[in-house]
Image (cartoon, rainbow, N blue to C red):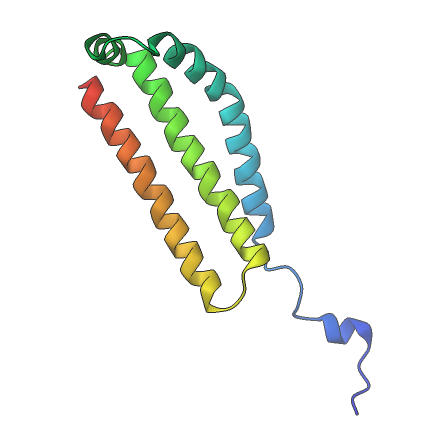
Length: 123
């Protein structure tokens, strides 16, 4: 029979000292997306329904290409951090590590594909 106090039983089970970094990254990317998404909508919106050649010529200009690229990059980083926190909260065991690695790989692959497509159009 162990005579442990509540404090002794809880020692070592507390914070992993990583929550602040995730929270701060999510806050920063949220503010970035708050500015980038309206810019993206107003630069991408006029091109909806236009012929392919006109869209390619429009995104060959620096401002629309940079706005689209930044929106993709920041959006997928925000997605990666959010899904990682979600998986850490609700999945346990070996599946947690596997899902986190899979979602990080998926996020980077999708961001790279989008940035490659924009670079291909812009250059």
